[in-house]
Amino acid sequence: MPYRVTLLPSSHEFSVAEHESVLDAALRERCSVLPYGCRNGTCGSCMATIQSGELVYPDGRPPGLSEREQAEGKALLCQARPRSDLVIVAREVKTGGDLIVKTLPCRVEQRELLAPDVMRLFLKLPNTERLQFLAGQYVDILLTDGRRRSFSLANPPHADELLELHIRHAPGGFFTDYVFNRMKDKALLRFQGPLGTFVLREDSLRPILLIGGGSGFAPLKGMLEHAFYIGLDRPLHLYWGARAKVDLYLDELPRRWVEEHLNFRYTPVLSEPRPEDQGLDRTGWVHEAVAADYPDLSGYDVYMSGPPPMIAAAKPVFTAQGLPAEQLFYDSFEFAPR
Ligand SMILES: Cc1cc2nc3c(=O)[nH]c(=O)nc-3n(C[C@H](O)[C@H](O)[C@H](O)COP(=O)(O)OP(=O)(O)OC[C@H]3O[C@@H](n4cnc5c(N)ncnc54)[C@H](O)[C@@H]3O)c2cc1C
Image (cartoon, rainbow, N blue to C red; front, side, top):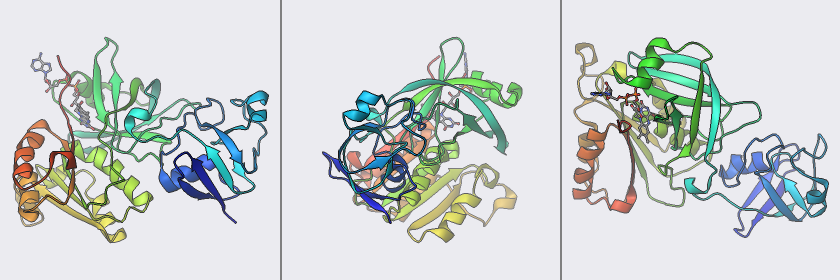
């Protein structure tokens, strides 16, 4: 039988099964509301105060919780299993700015060429570490000479065993040349994150338009997978702009989401279709397709990510079609300053 958890001072409520940790239940129902770090009872980031109720630790008191803290009513929510309804006083994460920005080493666990110029990397953190982030945020890869390169997290926060990046090759680019030409299996990297405020605003009731150009699909993938996971029932319409069919490097994924989620629509738009692409998808610029389909944007939240020229071209068009500035969110994939 599930127990009820009430968080104070917010009064947020969720249910937690007997075998499940309070943090896992919070992530399942309202992902990322509670802060966390290692998720193995060591770092103490998820410490909160139990105001009432009983809980147990199946493997004994976790290393990150002292005897004294336990006696004072503190608990580590990543390990705590409920034995009654609980009232918990806890700090909650509301925006990306509330999260701890970490500098971490990682290993490239898997590399996968998704398109001629897009590589998917899966990054593995040290066993004692987890990265808490909000869907849509990015990390900075730290290069040896102090330079940094930004890449969006393509996985949703609940699936954080490995971090997923979609890296487009900028020919002649310092880091992406390395990724495409010289990176070895199990290569080691260092990064800083999570960064950015390009995150899903869950408190809005408006339908959502998501517009990605090329590898701008990456943060939108994370946002959509998060939205499906928490059961967001607002209409979601993804437009994915690319040159040709081959550049829609995970096209089958949003096509599958259309089958699985009644509130989701998908419109791929090709700007330079090859002869074999003719008649398959919409053609033209992706923002023009959105503008044609939604002449009045005043009632929408719009999320855009991808090449700076796409963002620059779309903004005035969407504004002219009634989109208020506070309903437009975007990450423009700028190159790092030289
Ligand atoms: C918030 C954010 C999120 C991002 N997310 C993603 C993502 O998820 N996926 C993704 O693919 N990209 C993303 N980007 C873009 C990504 O950060 C850049 O493509 C990346 O930094 C390129 O790194 P690089 O070292 O390969 O290129 P750089 O070395 O920075 O070079 C960039 C370009 O400039 C040219 N160049 C470099 N030096 C010179 C020079 N001296 N003279 C003339 N030309 C030069 C290079 O040939 C290359 O074409 C994101 C950017 C931001 C800001």
